[in-house]
Picture (cartoon, rainbow, N blue to C red):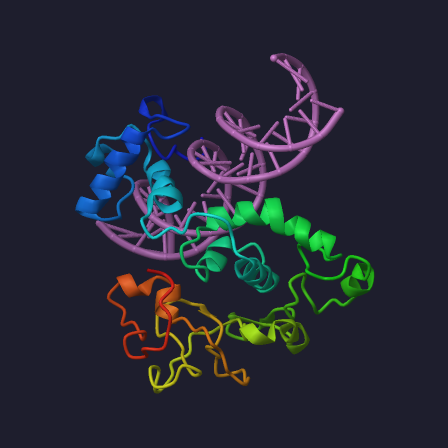
Length: 252
DNA sequence: AAAGCACTCAACCGCGAAGCG
DNA sequence: TCGCTTCGCGGTTGAGTGCTT
C-alpha cells in the first residue's frame, strides 16, 4: 500500500505557520537543540509533522539566516556553482552563508533563469543557446560540462570536470570530483591534499581540495573545510577548520 | 476602482539515502 | 543482510501581493 505517511495527517495543521507556532518551535529548539524532528512537534506542543517543523526552522526561523535581496556577487556565484553542480541546491546553499536551498532554488527559478536566457545562455547547460546541437553531439560531455563518468573496476565512479569547462570559472577553482575515499597520509597538513576519511563510499571534494588523481594549481581566496561542508563539524569527526585558521566554516 | 494577470516564495509532496536493530 | 524508520533533498504547488489594463 505504498509508503506510510510521515505523520498522522488527521491531527496536524497544514499551510502557513502562525506566530504562536513559530514561537513554540523557536523556544523548543533553543532549549533542546535541533534533531529528532519526528518527535519534536509532540514535545514542543505543535500540531505539525516533523517535516514541516524542520522546513520552517531551516528555511525561515534559523537565527543565522540572511534575509533580503541577493547581491550581484551572490548571483554570479550561484550561476557558477549551478554550472558545475546542477540543481544541487543544498550544495550550492552550503557555499552561500545565510542562504537556504529553498531560497536559492526559488531565486534561481524566478530571477537567474531569466538572467541567463537574456544573456543567450541555456539555464540548464550554461551553454549558448544557439550552439546546442553541436554540443549535444559530444557524447563525452554532460549537460553540466562534466566528462562522462569513469567506471573503475571496483565499481566506484569518478566524475571530473573538463579543464575547458573549468576555465569558465577560474577564479572559483571549482575542481569538483567524486571518487573513492582517499586516505591521505597527512590529511590535515595541506589543504590542497585534503581528503576525508569517512566511511562513505564516495567523497565529494569541494573546491580547492583536489583528490590524488587531479593536479591543478590552487590559489583561492575562499576555502571551506569538507567537514564543515558536509556538516561533520557537528559530529565527532575532527574538523580540520580548527587546524587551519584560514578556512571559512560556512555551514555553521 | 476593479478585474485579470504575473510574479514571488513559503510550504507541501514524494523519493532516495542513511541509520539502526 | 534485510526491513523499517527517519532525515534531507529537489520538484511542485498555491496563496498572497503587486502590476497592468
